[in-house]
Length: 248
Image 1 (cartoon, helix red, strand yellow):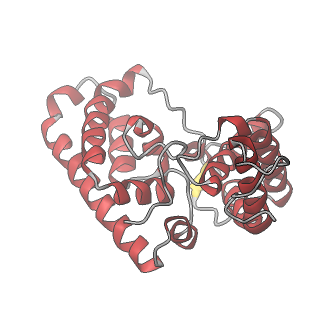
Image 2 (cartoon, rainbow, N blue to C red; image 1 turned 180 degrees about the horizontal axis):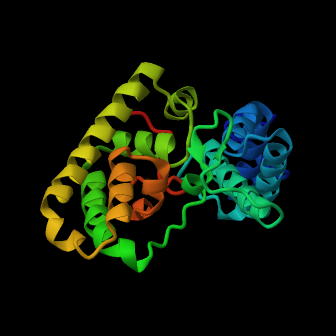
């Protein structure tokens, strides 16, 4: 009999292979967590059909690359990452067929402009002089966060999970997620302010309008700003390799 956690015997009665374990875990997550995957796609796309397509594409991709799942992160977290990537690909496909203002508000709650979600991670030369110090400081500050704060911050602001979904992934109460999110934001905002006070000499080479936009985005700790920062190189922040489901 197959267990939910993926522990099972193979056809020869021996220990299961890594591929069999991963396949069992994926079946369990899809059977029990499909609504959560769909909600995450819908929050980004704001369209039922596109969200369903994104989830379907994600499941096909996950099945095709199941051998790449190493078990360092939860299967549910690995699948969620693929769903979010597929949803962003859906957004890019839209732009091939229709003209949409980058200021248009999209998503389930119409909160984020399209330009925030489709932000190009490669800063142009005008931005590099100001973002370089900010990114370096954010990297150092994020690396100094405790493992649980790093995991909470990425789930909430990089992968756009709700409080309830983040709490379920981490296995902690919603109130704990709120407190951890606030602590992580406060620490990173403090780091950004420190760089802003010391960067006036360098910022004279940047466009004033772009500088104000970057300050605003980084101080608000929005997903668009996070996308410009290579957090995936930090220990515990790459959700595809970190054990995001561990408890504090």
